[in-house]
Length: 209
Image (cartoon, rainbow, N blue to C red; front, side, top):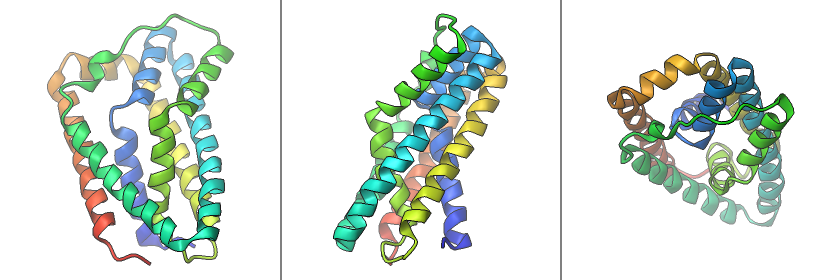
């Protein structure tokens, strides 16, 4: 099972990754602004549903890797740590990532949900993120590694749907706060990026189990 310290570290890393400006946040904000709070919340649920699928695929794929080679699994962990650093540095270099929020055409509930799931499932960055992010907090020698991967992935999806749901409910104010005052968006990017870089370096330099 996961120890408390590792789980808390995961919660911090997941929160930083979720709050980092990206396609999911922009999509939910756009949907909420155009279609209202209900549409925004449906979009948030769709994104989280796509993340659950990513979790299942990651667990299955990484489970095979675990059985094949513990060393290969550690390579994935190391690559993931450096990927977090890369994401953080790239994020801090963006001037105003929220400037791209646009008004989408109003649509019915099911098309909105379907589009949100598809948008998340076929995002190559999301696939890479789940495959490299989750193993950072799992020991390849653990007998419960597969369960840990599933627990972490589902926890990530739960945090994200809550975060995106809150954004959807306050879309108008959040969008105005971010798009009309670039300095605010810049602060979000720098804080999130710094956390990702710090966590990535910590994971890369930590002793492997």
